Image (cartoon, rainbow, N blue to C red; front, top):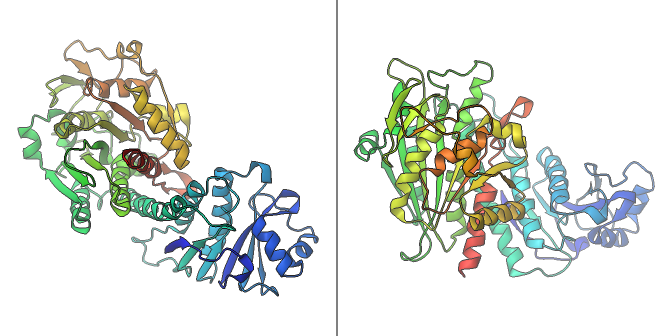
Length: 496
C-alpha cells in the first residue's frame, strides 16, 4: 500500500477512483465538500436533502459519476459535530472510510478528511496509521486466504499548501504502520512458531535489511556466564532455549547516548508450576507483546532513518511446567547480585526483565523504557484503552505522557512511592517476585523492577490491557508502537 500526499488541492480536478470528504452533523459540508458541491451543480446538497444522510459519525455513502467532478466516486463520511472534530474524531472517520475501501474494487483513493484540522502533520500521521490498521490481514495459517484488497494507493489531500512537517508525517505514519504490522504478525503467530529462536531470527532479519541495525543474540550459555540466574530460571521448564536479543540502531554519532527499549518476550506463558486456568490460556501467546512492540518500533525507526541512537533488548523465554521448572519458593540470583525468592512462577515477566535491565546498562543509555504485558491488575485499573506508566524520573514520565497524547496511544501514570516498596519483603532472599498481598499489583511489579535501575533514568509501561484484544476481534493491536515511535520522533526533533 502506498501512502502519499496528493499534488492537487482542488478536489473537483483530482482524477481518482474515489474522493473522500467529510460531512458534519446537520448536513454541514467540509471545505472540500463545499467546492465539490459547487462544481457538481449542488449534487451533494441535493442528496442530503433526501434526509438519509445526516453527517452522524459512522455514516458513509458513495455517490457515482457526478457531473463537474473528475473522480469516479465520491465517498461522503459522517464526522459528527464540526466544532468537536479533532484527531480522535478523525480516527473514527478514517476507520469508516478505510473499512468501505477495504471491501470495494477501488484501486486508488484521495482523502480530504484531515483537511480542516489545525495540526495537519499529526492528523495525517494518524490517518495513515488508522487506515493501515483497517487494511491489516492475518491469514498466514488459513488454508483459504482472504480476498486481496484492491486498493493500491491512498493519497491525502488538503485545500491549501501544507508544511514540510506534514509531508514528513505521511512518511512517518507509513513507517509506524509497518512497525505495527511487524508487531502484530509476531504477536498473532502461534506459540509453536513464534518461539524465542524465531524472535532471534527476526532480529537478525532486521539487521540484514537495515544497514544501521546490528544484532547480537545471547544464548543461555552467555546468559549463564553473565550471571543472569533470574532470566534463566523462567525457561528452565521448557525445551525451547531462552534468548537475550540485543539490537542497536545507529542514527547519530557514537558519542550520543542511546535511548534503551527493553521488551518482555515470553512467547508462551502457562504460568509454570503456578499454572494458569485453562480457559483463555491460548491468549498467552500475546505475553510477548512488549517484545513485539520493541521489534516494531525498531523497524519504524529504521524506516524513518531517525538521527538518534537506540538500543533494544528483548528478554525472551517460554514459561512451561516440567520436572526441571522453577518451583514456588526457589531462590535465584540476578545479574545485579540481588537474590530473588520466586513466590509465584506466574510472575515471570519481571524475572526476565530485571536481568535485561541490568544488562542494558553496559550501553550507558540516556534513558531506559521497559515494555511488558506484566499484570492483570493493570487491566483492572485502566481497562483496555490506556497503558500504565510508572517511572523513577518525572521528566521522562512527562516525555512519555506527551508522546502518548501526540500519537493517540496514551499512557496514564501511577504512583510508585516507598510505601509500595514496603510490600516487597522476603524472609529468605533480598526480594520476593510478588508483593505480600494482591493489592496494587501493577505498582509493586514496577517497584520490583525499580530495584534494578536505582541510579538510572527509567520508566515502565504495563501494556497488559492494550497489547491485544479478546473475543470476536481477537488479535494484536500493535500497541504501543505508535507511542514508542513518537518518543523517538520527538527526541530526534529535539536533538536537531
